[in-house]
Image (cartoon, rainbow, N blue to C red; front, side, top):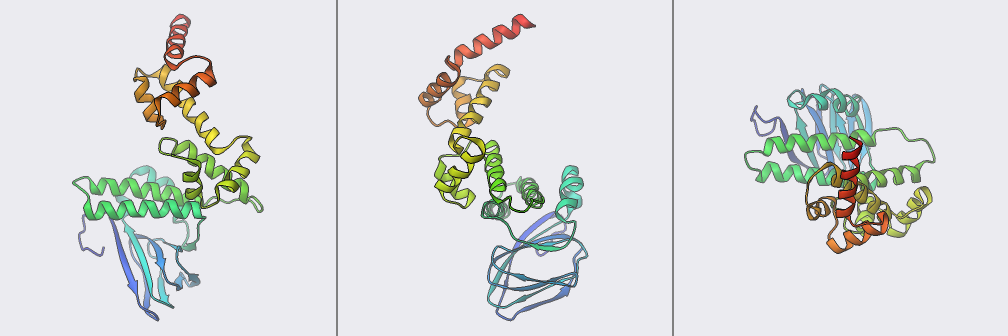
Amino acid sequence: MQNGNKDVVISLYESKHKEKDTVATHAHETYQLLYVLDGDGACELDEHVYDITADSFLIVPPQTRHSIRADSHMTVLVLEFDAGKLSQDVQTQLIPNVFGKARVQFFSAFDSSELRQILRKMLYEQSHGDQLWQMALKIHIAELLCTLARSNQEIGPGDTNKLRVDRLRQYIETRYYDIESAEDIAVRMGMSKRYMQTIFKEYYERTPMQYLTEVRLGLVKQLLVESDKDIVSICFEVGFESLSTFYRLFKKNFGVPPNMYRTTQKHRDKNLG
């Protein structure tokens, strides 16, 4: 890899190209993901030629013969790694899915945003990380490959809104703890708040924020019964910023305060046992 350290499992570096620069056809033993930060040009992957522009992702399996031509100033972020040093799950499930064939892939605004954030985390760990930086990189690359694998799933024609709604629902269910507002979600999804709320309500008969509240309260009920965590800690863990808001919403939805719900449910479970 570029830094010459054979112990480094994952390497992330910047490759700059001037206008009309050409990278001659070559191949690597490692897996590579190339993300075009800016500029445009073309690439050849196993004798197939693709146009590339900003936000293009080049998926390059090992031993793939490839080359790049820059038609303007181009900056490419190169992620290179040895899959054999990653976890077994990543090797058996994610690697075959993502690297089944060499290709250039474009992503939705939502997925592009997610991928950029993961790459930024990896750059930070590589530059400023502590003694755990290599472990952190392995975690982030698994997250990156998971995002790529999900984006690679085939979607039927005319299903754009359903795809967006499903990804929005999935985002809420997995990131419930750090969502701040509807505007926050809309920015992540790359769409207007109004449009986002319209299509979500069309499919689920509730707004994204109403669904977020349902997800959080469902987790609260589970934690109240299955753990001995303080109610304040549970409130914080699921993403509520205000304790008073949490109490109000819980009582409104379930008819009793959370502490009474916990006592009642545990007493009932004890009697059933």
